[in-house]
Image (tube, rainbow, N blue to C red; front, side, top):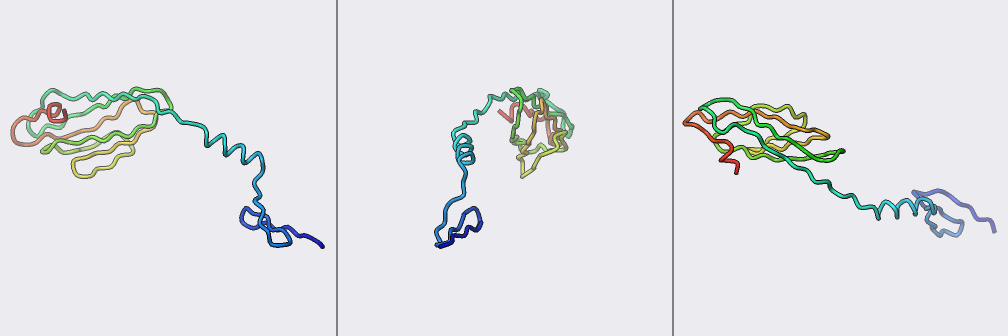
Length: 130
């Protein structure tokens, strides 16, 4: 009796219809090693630098200083206080949803963004964020 083998989606089909997994020892070993590796998250510190107070309708810059060990991939969400409005950023990857601005950065040491103060009265951006 002659047996034939055919490749079929990662399995080997033998002549009598049995499916035999075609996974080599090297592939199984590699999958096991990858499954056992644990990726440890590094500690990242972010410092926000803003003016103590701003004049009505003034545009000002917020600086986010990022410290951590490379490779560094961070996601930061800032909530802009009511009355203030987001103007622009130097960050290539960001998303705005209402008063929340989400930034995504790779190996960046800082993110800068501009905000406009409310038109009525003085605003204290720092106090509103805390």
